[in-house]
Image (cartoon, rainbow, N blue to C red):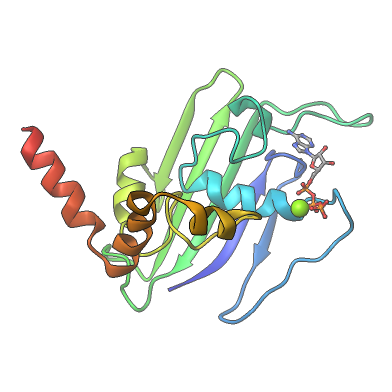
Length: 180
Ligand code: ATP
Ligand code: MG
């Protein structure tokens, strides 16, 4: 499984609709300070369901919507979609390509989709359990995160190992069963 593309429109500094294509290998994004490199990583976190605005370097969720520049009016929504190659069926869904999208409007209304069908955030989280991808996964290592992992409480660090070992989905299911 690998990330094939990211589509962004109206998210942070990306007012125009644009897409990044990736190949199975290493890609580096380079550019001057403030040009939007970290915003690309934020877009991936966000589409995977990040709800903590601090993680997205904002103070409220609306801050992810393009807020305008001297020459351009603010936009009314933000949209991000990522397409993953799933030809190795690592994601338990019957598609060789999986497209996850999220859209948010200034009203706060938001929408998630998996391959074009509206879904809940929970469906996206479940799809990515034990893959290392997802907002709790380790596929995006942010600045300062290594120090955090090293200094965290053992219980918190354990979650990382559970994810790597592939037992998160069983733990979650157990928790749901016990609650019922
Ligand atoms: P550095 O090299 O310093 O890490 P970077 O390339 O990672 O820089 P980012 O942090 O991704 O840069 O981008 C910051 C830019 O994004 C700032 O110019 C900021 O004004 C702009 N920006 C952030 N949120 C929005 C928004 N909602 N609307 C418009 N522009 C935004
Ligand atoms: Mg940066």
